[in-house]
Length: 114
Image (tube, rainbow, N blue to C red; front, top):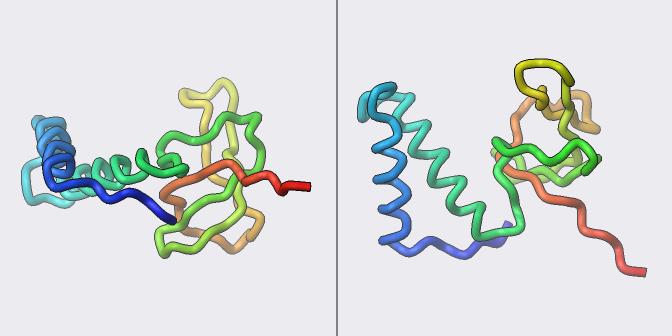
């Protein structure tokens, strides 16, 4: 994954905004606080790339997409939707039935040129 690095000021703005968002539900230094900060930084880095955060799954009609796993590997997957549920998105489904990790990002599979 090639991304443009965030400059120090942009990174600090992301951290400060995420820290402010945690007020009322997570104390600084706790696991919940750290997870929220980490996710905010990860999402900010992904914005500068062709990758989309896995927290914002692709539209159902996208079909199979390329996903980036936590260990840096790539898999083919699709977003599974449950219509009528409180949220339409249910989970990620992988070609590899033994895959248990959650992806961190996704992108449309680049089309092969003829």
